[in-house]
Image 1: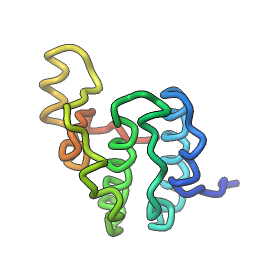
Image 2 (image 1 turned 180 degrees about the horizontal axis):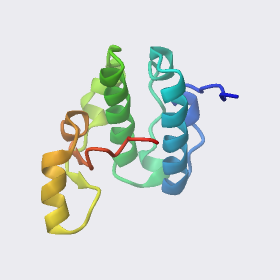
Image 3 (image 1 turned 180 degrees about the vertical axis):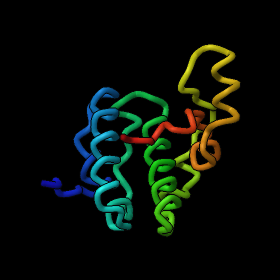
Image 4 (image 1 turned 45 degrees about the vertical axis):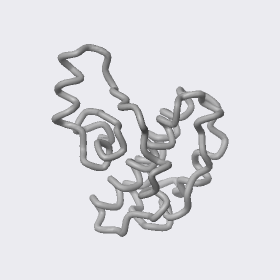
Length: 127
């Protein structure tokens, strides 16, 4: 039985920790994969920056995720995901070592790079 997908706006409304964010992101990706429709990413999720104290990383990550999902599924990218406020001023890397950072600079999907997020090419891949 496939669980009902919850729109991104609702799925991330109660996030309080970065661990919870990661869990909800994986769950959202799995459910979106089962039912890839625009309505799941159309509405802007509330900002998480103050709750997570992460300088906007989660907010930018959600915008990059919505854009990535839209592009992969031939859907229009939601306007909220294109806002400058959903991009970081200071680059964020998913790794600490210089060597890995150089790899992430090359491999990050465009949707992440334009938001100053540097992740692996398969950061959103799910089995």
